[in-house]
Every structure is written in structure tokens, then in C-alpha cells.
Image 1 (cartoon, rainbow, N blue to C red):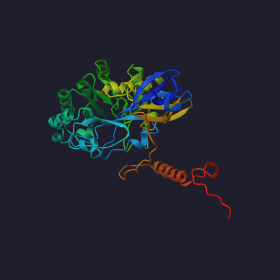
Image 2 (cartoon, rainbow, N blue to C red; image 1 turned 30 degrees about the vertical axis):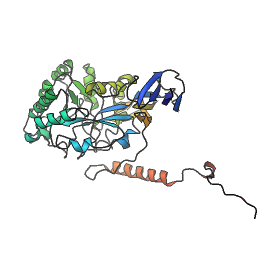
Image 3 (tube, one colour; image 1 turned 120 degrees about the vertical axis):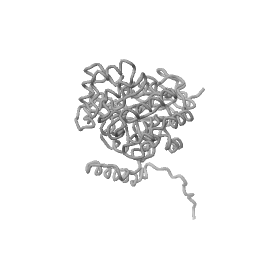
Image 4 (cartoon, rainbow, N blue to C red; image 1 turned 180 degrees about the vertical axis):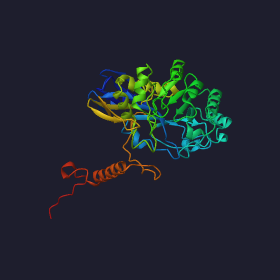
Length: 401
């Protein structure tokens, strides 16, 4: 039977697609497909899974499709943008990419910048449980932010309520760590196997004590969650020296981190490469590992898996990368996305919406955005081809007078 799509000549395998799923893999598959794409040795991966993003409504939310097509990210996990009161606004959103959800234990979600757990009435366990049970196909876990600004004087209580909701629904809890109180070690001590610590290399939380080792040893997962302030090179390097490695790599991509310092998932991956992680481990941390962490479809090139695919040029060159605190390192390589497929269909280019007015930008960021707008306008304002690139589609009939 003829395949719908064949990606051939890629590293490590050819991939054939039929009806939105992977139908065959191997070397030198027959070129029996409606569409054949020659990859010339470029890297083929499962569509990337970003375990921590914000694509719901509110202060932090962004649109995923205008980023997905040039980054290879086909599954976006919205990490707590919505709670029980606001989840429907995200549930009804239509995107080309897959969106899974971690429901905020605060029913209000992230309508504002912070403070959602200062009023414990927002941390409504029965309402969270009911919302998860009714939408278990989409909601894969619970999110809670544990830092001084978010919880106020409530200490560990928002986390305890998130864990109670997780126990009652059988889902993991992702915990944001930041500036204490509550003390980071006390947060870590409460987590269960399969729960996730995001911003695991945070320079604000600095999780380096024995509580981190104990959490990892009992099966707690560590997620990078770069964001605007959640990733520091020196903290990650000290963890690596202790033999502690991140489980997953995510961007915490939102309206304030999209234009820097996180930028996108391939750029964030380069930051882990700069710290010495091998490419194979970095790719696992954005594919199969996040898929397993939340029971998500995809993450592999196995036959029968969704045909969410990404093709990259692995460019071996010195590439400067920056952490959340403006420290720089050099990555030995970077991944340049060439093609992104969701359910076997190539994602089309999409222009991003304007930056919301409440987002703080530097003069350099504003100038770069204005320059990008001018470049795009100039690109589309120039005729696509000249006369030598056209056909006479309706030839004139030449008759003698």
C-alpha cells in the first residue's frame, strides 16, 4: 500500500507515514509514497515535547503555532496557566499542535503575574479533582508554584493541596520552585515518585542540598523549566558534579521569556549541550522522557506512534548561549529546524501576534522586533519571481487580421 509521506535519507532512519501515524521505519525504504522528502543525512527526531510552557489565556500566555513550525515542538504542555475556573478557555482553543495540560491547583490559574495561592480559597481541591476527572484525556497533572510571591504566608499548604488532588486523581504534580519561603528543601521533602520539580537548576532556589539527592533517589523528576529566571549555568554544573542530571528539558516559554532569555526549545537544548550533556541525552530529554513522565502520545519513532516528526540540521559550530542571569557559555553545536510535521502534515509558517503591551522589553528587544517586522514586510512585499519564473497561464490567441 502506498504511504502518504516518506522521509528518506535521514539520520537515523527513513520514516514512512500513513493516516497520521508512523507506518514503517528502516534504511532505504521503498519510495512508494504520495510525497517523498529527501533529507540528505539530516537528523530525524520525534516531534519535540516541551514539558513546561504557557499557551493558555492570561498574563503569561502565548500562541504555540507561530513557534512550533520553526522549532520542531509538536506537543506543548501548558503548565498551570489555567485552573478549574479558567480551563474551558484553553480546552476549546484550536491549534495545529498537541496541547496537554497541568491544571493549576489555584482555580483562577495565572490570570495575573503572581499571587494565585495567597488566598487559600483559590486552592480548591474538590473543584480541581472534578475538573481533572472530567477531562482526563487532556489534563495530565497538577501545577503549583511555591515561592514567596505566589504563596504569601501560606507556606506549604498550597503544595499539600496539590498533592491531595494528585493522590485523588492519580496524576503527578509539577512544582515550581523559586525564592523562599517556603524553604526549598521542605518542598522537595513532600514530593512523591513521579512528581516533577521544574526550574530544577534555578539560581533563585539553588536546590543543591541533601533534600535534592533524596528526592531524586526516590524517583522525583527534574525539569529544567528555563523561563525568565529559572535556569543558571552554575547551579546545573554543580548538580552535574554531584551526579544529578535533569530528567527533562523544557523552556517555560511564555510572553516574557519568548523574546529572551529562553527563546525556544532548540536554543534551550543548546544550553545543556554547552554544559557537557551529549546530544543523544538532550534529545531524549525532549522526546521520550517527557512522554513517559505524563503518559503522552509520541516521543518515539516506533511504528504506530503519532507521526509527529522534526528534522534538524546539526550545525557543528561555536554558538553563544545565555542563562537567565546573563551568564554566557559556548555550545559546540546547535540544532536548526528544517521541517516539522504534526500527525504527518507539515506545519505551515505562521506569523506571531504582537507582543502584549504589559510585557517588559529592553530597547534592544524592541529594536530587534521592529527589524524583524521590516524584514518580513520586505520579503512579502517583493514579487515572488520575475517573468522568467512564470508561465503564460492564459495564452492570447494569435489571429491574422
